[in-house]
Length: 48
Image 1: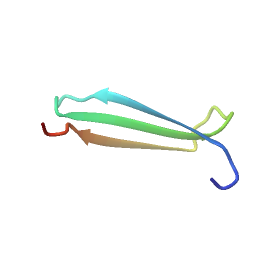
Image 2: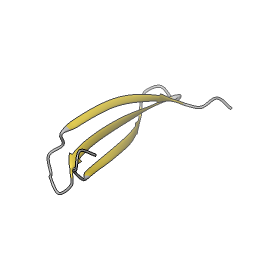
Image 3: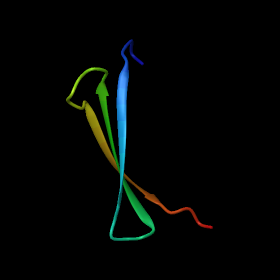
C-alpha cells in the first residue's frame, strides 16, 4: 500500500470480563522498530 511494505502485529489479551478480549494492533513500515499507528479494540465472544 502506498508503495511501501508494512508489518503489523496483533496482541490479544484477556480482560476482567470472560466474554471480552482486548486486541492491541500496531503497524510499522517494514524494517522500522517504531510503530506508526496503534489501535486498541475489544472483541466479544461468539455466541454458541
